[in-house]
Length: 163
Image (cartoon, rainbow, N blue to C red; front, side, top):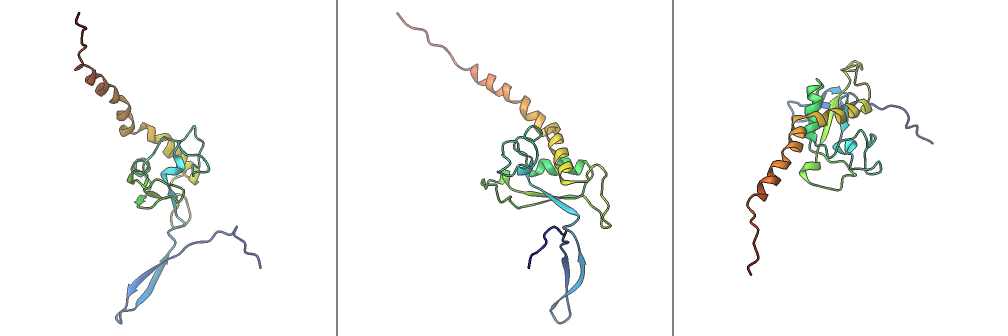
């Protein structure tokens, strides 16, 4: 017997309530996973290879994006977003900086798209990769590094040789 994996499956979340006898009873179902997509920072990281988990071309990717940056960009675009404390299986670094998964709602309950410009995962990832370099946190970091380097050079004195 062969199994056909090409069919789309809908995951159901059972909503439970406690009955008077203390047992849990099913009070409804909701298909959440069908409407939300996951975006890990590794998907749009230019320092990763395709084998390490990057999903868009390196030229369009961003250097070391964080979940907070992805969340900020998508919330500004008007999408329903929330961050989970999860890690991508191919991410070997366990630091807090690389931790996190962003869930994005791209479809309504009736199956229609929330926004017409986001009709696929790739469009969401391309949009995020395009907008992250324009964030204030990214533009401020690049301009402030030169002032601290010049400040340290003023205190050095040169010694003259005595004859």
